[in-house]
Length: 304
Image (cartoon, rainbow, N blue to C red; front, side, top):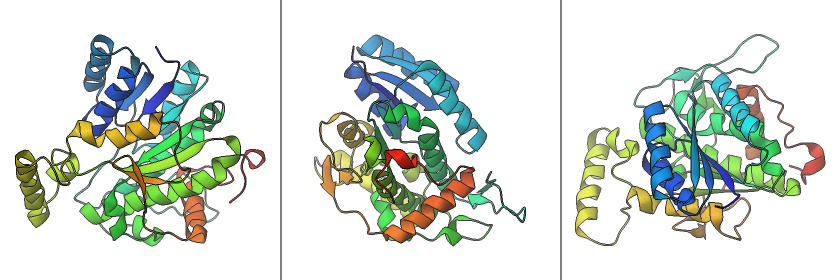
């Protein structure tokens, strides 16, 4: 058994489940987050019977920022360190759905945040904030699953709030660019505490919800990708286990670039975002989830 501990969000199915099993095969203790308790129980059973690791399940709905805080508190109650926080959970919404933000404003106003961005980015920002003491205690890592779809977005917070704005693939792309910007800002801010941040593109997985919930020509394209992927041993088609490989690499390799973006276990270029825009976005997210934007603590980072 390794003494390493990881929390994997969205760990009960798909890429997240394969990431959990990959870590457990290495002897890690894995905290599995998900919404479905029965799926969580099944993954824990698989870990117990098929790996040298250990697993426990914690249930939380990432659309509820209060539940995110409760999730972090449950982790902190049981563990005094966290070697890896793997922000894997993600959602894809065909309709524009809003989540209530929880910060305070002098005028009492509060615009709803688009659900895809709220779950894929804001909830993970808050979870990282809440678990920072456990991560910094062991110079841990924060790995966030992004996507190459981020290249088709721009960092514009006006797109993330209110009833009018992107849905479907575009909202998903927005959330994935948010993951990249968060990773870069966190890498700068957390460097003094020894915490490393990186993000990755997992690959194209036709069986994922991203593919299943796509509409029109997009959905047809995913189906064709799946057919081609079953006929040829190359190209942009990955199984869920293959897609988890880069997350596992970033969690376990000896050396990764702080703030880096990885694909196929290799450092690659992500879309450029301005440092000032990233800082503004950091503060915007802190306001959305109701925390002080001045984190990590000023005496443990090199500044941003």
